[in-house]
Image (cartoon, rainbow, N blue to C red; front, side, top):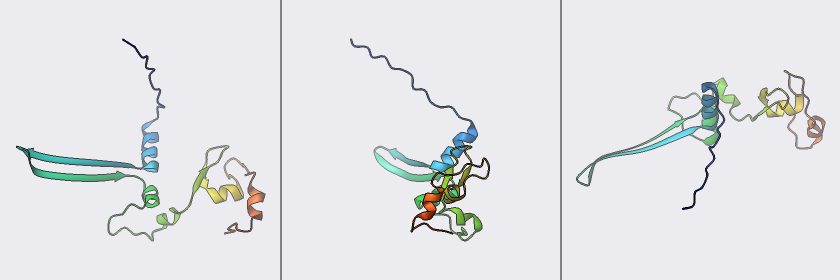
Amino acid sequence: MNQTNYEPVMRERGTLVDIIDRILDKGLVLNADISVSVGGTELLGIKVTASLSSFETAARYGLEFPSGTNLKAPGWQQTDVTFALCPECGNRRDEKLLINEGCPICGWTSPLKDRVRSLPFHDKK
């Protein structure tokens, strides 16, 4: 008999806050099909799809929102903005601002700062 040695998979541990942040950032979809049958005849069938994510993630993937959601509220104005992390301190900031102005927390300056401004298609908002 051929024995194979399996090594345990090491998983990164995180706090509850890290896990919730990851779920809200990436999104989570649960699908459930429930059926009650008697004698091979289905008496009850329920199909449930639930999603859990931040509004930003939901907007990015085109999920529908409940009726009555005010999409003109100030919080929705940021859904089309791409965020990036400062490579020096990890500060989360608008990607365009990070490249153009650098990081206000640690003072990091992008090496692309002058190059991006000289491109003809650069948006100078």
